[in-house]
Image (cartoon, rainbow, N blue to C red; front, side):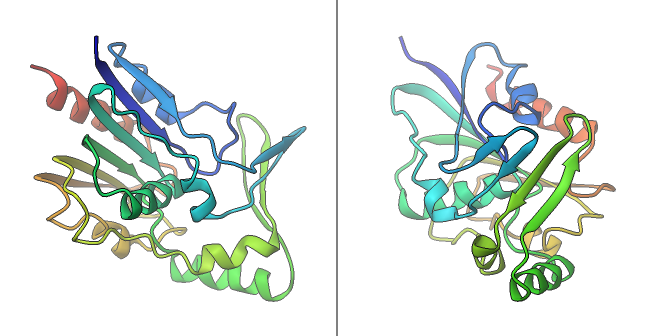
Length: 220
C-alpha cells in the first residue's frame, strides 16, 4: 500500500542533528519522513566541518517513486540544494514545497565579509548554536562556492502545485529580494510568500504557518 512522504532538506547540519524540519514533520504521523544527509560533513566533539558544494550535496538526493504524495521542506542552504536537484531532475511528482529562509544568493553584506575571508585565506566560522554549543566551519577552499551561489529557479522547471516561502525581513545572510522572487509564478499553481520581522532563523509563528499550510493541502 502506498503512503505519503515528507523529504527534508536541512541547512548546514550534521546528519544526527534535529530541528525545525523534524518538528514540522512530527505533526503528520501519516507521512514517512526522510531527511537528506549531505556527503562530507563531519563532526568532531562540538565542531562541524562543512565542505560546501551544492553539486556534491545534490548527489545525495533520492526521491522515491512509490508514494501517493510527496512534499518537500527545505531550509536555508537546503533550498539551494533542492533547487539544483530540480534543475537536473525535471520529472518530479512533488505536490507541495516549503522554502524556509531560502538561501539563493548572499546578501551584499555577507558577500563582502566572506570575500574578505576568502582573500585572506581564512575559514568561515558560523554563529554557534547556543542550545547545543555547536560551532560550524566552512573551510576557505569552499568559500568560492558560497560566493558564486545563484540558486534561483528557472521558469522552465516543472510546476509544483503548492509552494510556500517564509522569509525574515531582518535577514542579513541571504539576499532578501532574490529570496522573494525565487519561486516564479509559473513554479506553483498556488504560491504564497510570508515575511516575518526576524533574522535568518525564523520564529515559532513561521513553524505554525508551515504546519497550517500542509494541513490545508493534505486534509481531504
